[in-house]
Amino acid sequence: MPTDIKAGESNLPKVSIIIVTFNAADLLQQCLNYIYKQTYPFLEIIIIDGGSKDGTVDILKANDSKIAFWKSEADKGIYYAMNKALAHITGEWVYFLGADDELFPEFSDLLYRVKDPSAVYYGRVIIKNKQTPGPVNAYKHAKDTICHQAIVYPVAVFKKYQYNTKYPITADHLLNMQLWSNKDFHFEFTDLTIAKFNDTGISSTKIDKIFKKDQATLVMKHYGPVVWARYVFRKLKVMLNPDKYKSDIDAY
Image (tube, rainbow, N blue to C red; front, side):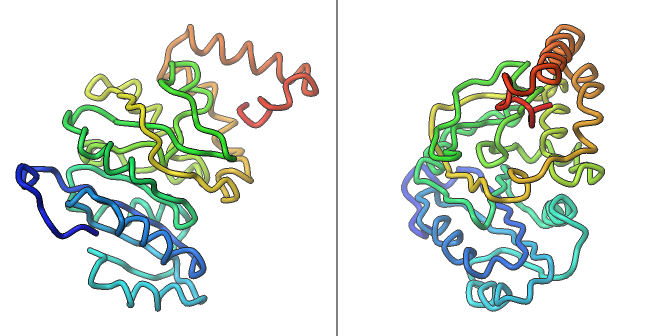
């Protein structure tokens, strides 16, 4: 991570980067190197490991001087680990990075722009070699949400919310729903591509059946009847014509 503070940068906010891992020894050092290459000067790294036995702990020990906090012990899953990590952050902004993701230089460019503590800032990421689209409307937000690795959250979010561990794969989707309907926060798009999201992880290869069962109710609660009606109508079309709407099946 950069150590030289330029004139005018001393008042920049600290950003906490949270990584949760399990048996990621083949990936973790490269992930850390992406962070170390960032030009933004005030970053802290928090790592919660789920009790890996593959050499992950050796990597954590080797990088101890550059990691603000790390712990390795068995846990109950991704969002339990994220909630645990949140207890150790000291930054004013929070970002979640997977050990198998790639952080781009434009991540620092985005961090230099975050100023409004009521704004949830998001940019673009690369998924399956394609760039994610720009600003997300209410329907898209309700149906698909925004990729976790595209978002920088103000710390105020986590003074009010934690991840709901009822949903083992997509609790971040629920968090974004809650923020969308909370008038104390708003989403703000910045046209920067900040990371490459690895689409071979659990969130991309498995469906959170509990969340999908609840999703229509959650859409009504957080987006209102207009978005809910569009969501339910589209879901019905997908279910009646699965061959025609193959690309949409997982979204419902």
